[in-house]
Image (cartoon, rainbow, N blue to C red; front, side, top):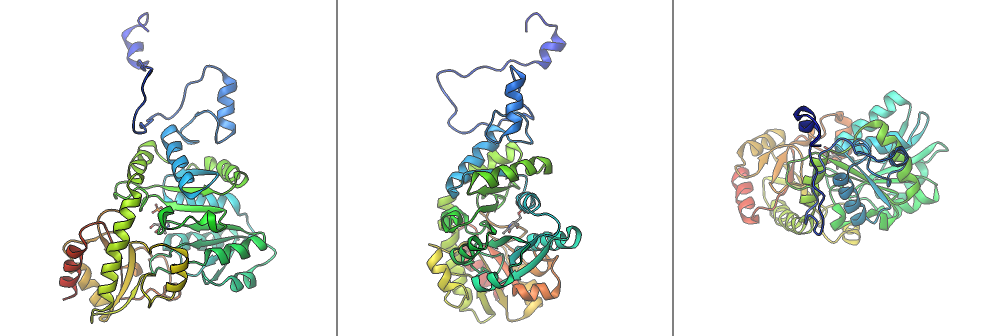
Length: 390
Ligand SMILES: Cc1ncc(COP(=O)(O)O)c(C=O)c1O
C-alpha cells in the first residue's frame, strides 16, 4: 500500500492478522461484505447457509455466532437471526405458506402475530383456524387437505396459557403439518420445544435472550436441515437479516440468561402470589398459580413459569389506569424480558390490533394489567406494587 497516494491509502486500511491468540468474546464484524481471492469461493458463499461469509444480508460472523449459540441451546440443526421477532415470524410464515394454504393457530397469541396472521388471511388468501393450545382433538378436527402448519406459543402473551406441546406436535406430525412455536416467554432455559416435536422454534430475542432492553431482534431455529435451507432462501429475499451490533448485544445478554431467568421466575412467583391475595385484585394469570387453567400442564412441561403475568383489578379500566400512573419503580413501557420491571395495558398497547371479540377470546379485559417482572429485589417490587394498589 505504501506505493499508493494518500487518497488511496486512506481508503484501503491495514487489517492486522491476529496470530498466536484470539479474542475472548466474539468481535463485532461491522462490515456489509467480505473480500474473496477467487470468484468460485464467492459463488459458493451465496449458495448455502453454511458457506463462506459473503454479504451481510445472508449472514455475518457475529450474527452466525448468535445463530449457532441459540440453535445449540434449542437443539436445532440451524437458525436464521433476523432484525426483529416479527421478522422471524414473517420469514417462517411467508417462506412456507402460499395462497390457498390453511394454517391452524392457537386462540391466544401475541397481538402482533395475531394481526400478521389476520393480514395474511385478508391479503394473500391464506385461511386460518383457531384452536385451544392444549386440545389435540380440536387440532385434528380443524385440519383440511390444504392445512400446512400449526402455530403455537409455549407460554402465551399475556395471559400465560401453556401449550400442550407434546400432544399438539404429535397430532401435527401424524397429520403431516409443520409445527411452529414461539418460545419467547419460556426461553430454552425453561423449554426446548424441539425435544417435544417442534419443527421450528421462534424467538423475539428482543426479550429474555438479549435481556437488557437495548436491542430488537429475532431468530428462527429449525429442527432439520431441509426446512432450514428452504426458509433461508426466502429470508434472504425478505431482507429481514440481523445487524451485527444487535447480534453482539444479544450474545452478550445470552451469557447471563440462565441466572436472569431464575430471578425473573422467582420475582414473578412472589408478586403473583401476593397479588392473588390482595383485595383489589380479582385474578392473577401466571401458570405457576394453582388457579391458572394451565397449572397442571405447565407443571409437567416446565421447571418454572417465566417472568410475565397479567392481573385484573376489581376497579376495571379506571383502576388499571390509576395503577399504571401510581407505580414508581416499575416502568410503564412496552416489551418484556429485560432486567427492569415493565408494566402495560394489553388492550390498548401490545394487543391493540385485536377487535373486542378477539380480546375477549384471548381473555384480556379492560382492567387487565401485564407485568414483565425484572431482576430487582422482589421486596422493593412488592412495596411498589402495594403502594400503587393502595
Ligand atoms: C411472544 C412474542 N413473540 C414475538 C414478538 C415480536 O417480537 P419483536 O417485537 O422483536 O418483533 C413479541 C413482541 O412483544 C412477543 O411478545
